[in-house]
Image (cartoon, rainbow, N blue to C red):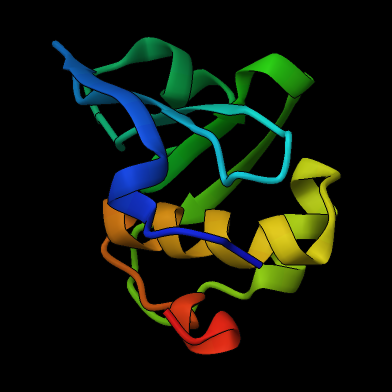
Length: 116
């Protein structure tokens, strides 16, 4: 659950060369998340080597967890995000929305859950 808008809770965001986006998100419940989202890059030997071609690599930097998100579109489940990033359901709902926005997917609108 979020207590304010995603834009108001995103305290830092930048995109580095090579399609890497890093953002810091503080939902207002005492937690802080630093996400690194790396876009698919067929010329990157690292992603080719580990079989990640066509997938976004999403890392929760300050929690030491990561997951992959296929670049095929579709729905991104908050349950999948919670399981892979080892976070609670409320924060997973918001992080799924953020990740979906950056990976071209759809997810549940977290503002519908709290009336924002």
